[in-house]
Amino acid sequence: MSALDWAVVIVTLTTVVVYGVWRSRGERGLNDYLVAGRSLAWPMVAFSVMSTQASAVTFLSTPGQAYSDGMRFLQFYFGLPIAMVVLAATAVPIYHRLRVFTAYEYLETRFDAKTRALAVLLFLIQRGLAAGLTIYAPSLILSVVLGWSIHWTILAIGALVLAYTVWGGSKAVSYTHSLQFAVIWSGLAIVAVVIASRLPHGVSAIDALAVAGRLGRLNIVDPTFDLENRYNLWSGLIGGCFLAMSYFGTDQSQVGRYLTGRSVAQSRMGLLFNGLAKVPMQFLVLGVGAMVFAFYLFTPPPVFFNPEPVRAVERSAMAPEFARSAARQNAAAADRAAKAVALIAARKGGDEATVARAGQALERSHRDVEAARAATVEVLKRAEPGLNPNDVNYVFLRFVLMNLPVGIIGLVLAMVFSASMSASSAEMSALSSTTIVDVWKRWLGGGGDAVHQLHASRWITLMWGVFAVGFAEFAGRLGSLVEAVNVLGSLFYGTILGMFLTAFYFKRVGGTPVFISAILAEAVVLACFFWSKISFLWFNVVGCLVVIGVAGVLSLLIPRWRIVTR
Amino acid sequence: MPELRAPDHEDSAQEPPPVLGRWSRLYALVLIALAVEIAVFWALTKAFR
Image 1 (cartoon, rainbow over the protein chains, first blue to last red):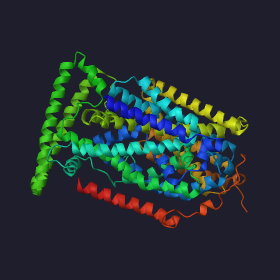
Image 2 (tube, rainbow over the protein chains, first blue to last red):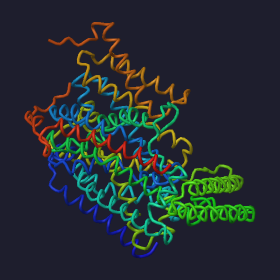
Image 3 (cartoon, rainbow over the protein chains, first blue to last red):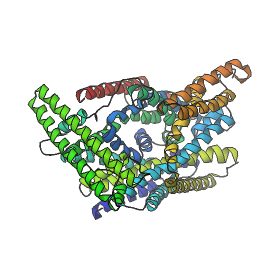
Image 4 (cartoon, chains in turn blue, green):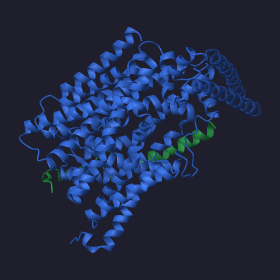
């Protein structure tokens, strides 16, 4: 990395930290620390909600996903705008009216202490582990690609986040989110423009995308209904809606963001703006991945995007075999480039038969590249038996480092750090709020004056930060368990959503049937996870419906569990 | 039971949105925008297939 890139990274991140500390000065109690004094206008709420959801992995992995699998992942977000409307109309007014600090306080008001405690427990487990992975995942990618120490990278991200989150709490998190939002999205837009300018002479962005589309990279909408197909229109609209309702309506890392709005209207506007902007923004992220794919149609891509196993095999006795395999792969890629140019020429000629023939030739050539790549990966796997053949996470960063100009590389790295910090800070703030309000104050008798509560809150935020950094340092030794932790959210979200939807809409159902049905729903979701092929997005629907259905039936069968209203 | 703060934003839920005058219109805008986006993406998928 050049001095200019380092300067861009350091100046950007220092500005974020200083700005966060400066904007949160003068805090006087829990209301300031946990919900920013409920004082923020809707643009700040919207930026904070969106920055919380977009972690570094969003920007490192999602373009790689479009590169390898096309843009169909966009459908995952189709349910989000519907969820934003539902939550703006229902959850936001309830949370504001009760003046809660956390979503789980509402559950005790509506049901009972044990139901609140169950939801808090599920949240602290899954979000506590996820907070570590939010730091670990980008640190791993940055360390592998840039040759940095993973331990120092984790510590650097953790220290930067804690520097303003411990001191300033929710207000610091929200204000830094707006700055991070600007860095992330301006950076991505600049990258998109630079990629388009790096295409070969005579190849426009539309030409390149047309060729990428011919090879299945613009497969955005798939209307086929298939429970085992992870991303299609229906799993996105239905499963995605349930997931988004659960994440934005019941996960404190998001609820805490819009509770900072100074009125119902400001919080609602923040969510609705997210509903309007999210899908186009994810289209941009995936579009960058499709553009990277298009770029590598004309320029031979790295034989394997994760550089570490390549460096290892080149030092081993299998180096000659690897070199031959890599040469075959590069030759196939060169042939594909010629076929791509031929297809563009045919499209400009306008003769449909010629276009069809050129398209078929390109598809054959692409299959040859894929076969040659599979052979190269086989060589790598023989050299390193435990190798993960999936190098999607490394596509975007390798592309940036190899092809973008000095200065822009620094901007992209600042973008990755900013995204990691924005997601982590919201998680630590939420874990801290929940621990203070739902554990310390509720069960451990915590209290005292405002200054004491503020100090206790800072210590608890620091404790969660240390836990997240510690877990991130340890995560590398967990191997495949990391993946299990990643799906943890989907295993719990449906159940928690069911509890909240029952609370919102089924006024006669009491706490005990909800508690019992939540435990049953969790068992059903885990059974689906272990013994079925149902895509994880549907777990949210299953968990939610089991809670609502069983709780409803139980309260009908057992009258003393019913709430009698006058 | 937790002691919840007394609501001091009772009128807050009635506050109109800063644009379009009514919340129902804003909700419709979000849903119509989604429908339009899906239609455009479907057209893109077919055009570039």
